[in-house]
Length: 583
Image (cartoon, rainbow, N blue to C red):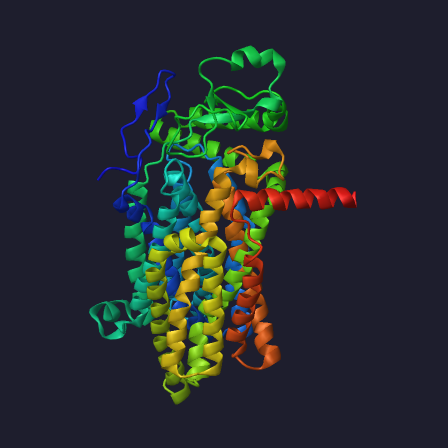
């Protein structure tokens, strides 16, 4: 199959390679989103069983809420750094794929750790109380790592989609396919959990429902990851940026050589010759000048000495020498990304993106309150079960049955989301982004009200299906808007200094990370606060009441989103006038 780059590289007169522009076929879009589908399969199937596994392991409701908040907290801290670093990655494998692969490896490791931690421990220390303690530690660490990787890996995936469609009119279409693949992943994930694996040959081989589910997830995710990595053949960024404002006048003549190039955002397209971003590119191997040298000159010199040492040390093994040389280069590059200057710039968010992130945060808090606690709500409130009761007791069986039936409701939720994703692009064209987003959250609020008022399992699962519309809007519209903002940064990001509008200073990865930041924050606050809310109210009905209340709050903030250039100019102008009056 033709790769995503869609063409054979042509050599330009200056010696650089470029990829001709072209459209992306539907098959390429599906394969590019395959890893997204795989991540969602893992998340939906895995986290259907993780809350019951934690409760059976001895965790209380409050402690479980704290533990489930650790993964999003790690994402909140590290995903903005990952997004910014992927914008500035000059790996020969591209900008996004190294991050996707690294996070995927950690994800697969966590899938082994959760069900088989105690088994691996027993191989070393035997079947003892110590092995049970090690298994509990493995379960705890695996849950946190799985929660972090299933969410953090979406950031480079989303940036990869924007890179692939940036120079075409397929941006909205590719994010519609993204929503479709997320919903399809949920369908497959919940179908896997709805199957009784204990009586199947796989269940007998792996020794239980949970162990079989997680083993199947490893195989499925690895296959889908391979499909995406093979089709997404990025063009590596082979040159390093130099800020014009830092270049001395004495070197201006050398900077005007024919080997100069302009900074490009997309790793798939490098044929533009516009100088709007105000950044010049030098060939790899040339040194930086001006302020850049003064900031990292000593560090770069130390890196060169360290790389030279490893090159000599491993000269008798060329392949290993190249590996260590590249490894030291990656470590030094990562250190440069974590300088205080870069970290400070993560917080310089334009006002239009701030408004979108606030609405996105409220909407995700509502939806995650439903997704995380729905199975527990059905098992205890609708079926009257108890997760702490003995497995063979009536209350224990009722809880397990409720969790199993609730997975069908989540399956219907994903099916409806997949169906609605086909119509999101048309709805936004006809009614606009804000109206479509608002309709989705209004339907969600009514669904939460229905679950609280009528607690019959068929009706509750029907309401779970109705939330699919809200899910399809929140997984498409915010990304459509960010891509629209990023395509015309001089208008939408007019409140930022021009120096911060270049693609290397504010790339699409950093902008998408802002949305993911709000996504992680919603989970951190929801999981941290829900245990206290349940303790204060004394009822698990507060799960759905809290989700509905946050849905109402999201509707208010969606109304403040900026969706076109006229609104952006008017809002930024009004804010500037208010600041002048205050001054």
